[in-house]
Image (tube, rainbow, N blue to C red):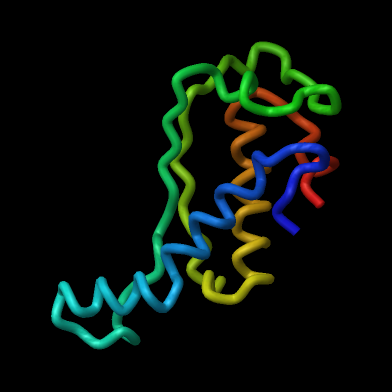
Length: 116
């Protein structure tokens, strides 16, 4: 369920995705672009830029640093086109994948244990 234990890190991406695929947002995009709502594409990804290292944003008690992996203050996460982000289970799966990638990009392993 796209949440990290004892953390809100995993909830904001899911809420952001939920908003972007919500009927009101989709209808407004369709209105602005002059197309039908069914033609409005789902988000293709999420670009994250932080003002500090990502590992400072995550609860690292369980995560382990990967030796010589370096640090990251950003991430470019592409959506899995096989997932329907309007579906809550698919949306959670997508966010879980992004969180695992976020941890690895930040030079941390063990995110699998935190994503529940």
